[in-house]
Length: 367
Image (cartoon, rainbow, N blue to C red; front, side, top):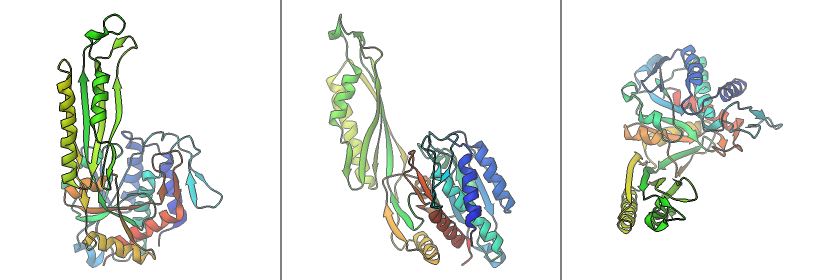
């Protein structure tokens, strides 16, 4: 049985280690030491992702390994975090000036405590591969650069979901990145504006033609950044658009991507003196599993064994799981007891995190 006091201490230690994206060395060293002390063989790939292998015990050593995964980085503002425990003894939050970092420190703590408890119990357990990725936030870059030759698991859990561990994510969208550089013609806005071509006006015309926001129940799109111009008295020569398309349906994603491309082409024809350099590419692919999928069956059984009721849902967000599925690893995300990811209102529920450690230990236990 996991130790709640130890779990809480581990979580607080992890939260206090700054690990914004690109600065994961300190937390990596801490986690590597914890896993090595459990008897795991700890390795790192060229990108710096942590891959630790813990052999099975007794007759379970011949079973295929399961993956336990979480990511080491956090979003900003995430430096000098001061975790505060509410008087109820259940809820962790920051002092309000930073995020808490429960995303994904709670996931890391769950894996460490689940494994620690399993090793201490001395009961048969199956082989495990721990994958703690870097640079998950903002692009799943650690997972996309993971050396998959180090990973032999074909099933597992990604501890990186919102809410309780009983929430199992069975479907997530693909994402296409949309970026465009627009070059117009600069001119003095007071003396000769008619000789200029405003790159911002070109961008505005593009925006009016794009399907944006919630398109349907499984498809969204957004232009999240528009930059351009130098000064108020210069017709802006340059503009930059940065956005995305997401859908759990690949055909829809392809169709709306084509619609985006047509909109850019239409506007380009309206401004022959301007140029538009559009780049759209796949960031990650969608995944979806049926209700009888072996990974879902396994995780649901572990949730049941912990006295919880499993529930399934789909999401509009991506995670390392999307990349793992592309490489044949059916590792489903589950909740980690955290709410309000990426905000200074973020909280972590210690009872739900403890439940996560119990489910993690149940997964490790040999069948």
